[in-house]
Length: 232
Image (tube, rainbow, N blue to C red; front, side, top):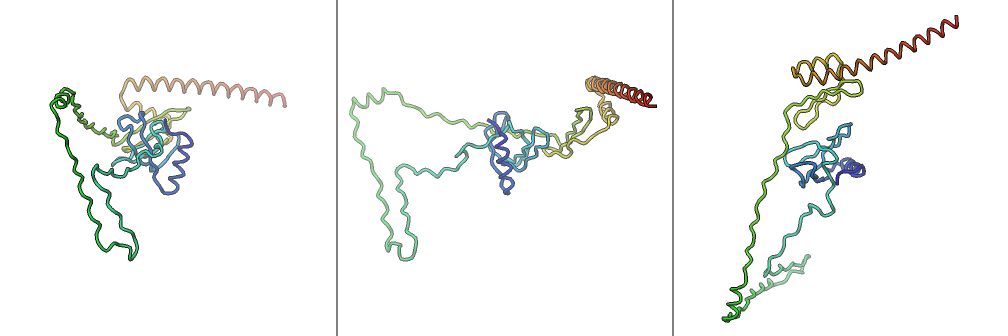
């Protein structure tokens, strides 16, 4: 399960009240799956990781598929269980004049009588296997995912270049427009043959689309000039 649109609307309503709702990390979150965190902000601005969650000493961004709302009663604190053989402490009534004059007598310890074990019973109990309790092995805590100190991403989409920057888990710049010449200069500065090959494919596509657009505009211009010539 993951966050639905109704769950996201619920989180927005709780955040609007000044509260920080709890969420549970799903298996898609990786090492932190099963842990809980508190939503501190929502930023659905066209990015996948728009849910900012604080857990422990970290504050990271996650997608809706990596989170879910806790089930009813999940994470609730349980009252301490009473040990066997212990009597419940009496509760004194509240209000003046209702306290007892003398303290209530303490309950007497219950002494259990043991019957002597005869020889046949001892032989039979010795033959039966004794169950040895298994020791619980402590699982190591999953380390929180690390983020680089500074990350800059150059993106080409719908004929335009944009750049985004993040410092750690916090986004500093989102979708700032970049000119074609500046974007190509950034790609060439990387000095990577793989990047140059991919950029050449993108540039060839841009040129092809621009040539088609120029040809279409020329035809429209010729048609408009022909109509003007007929009106003279």
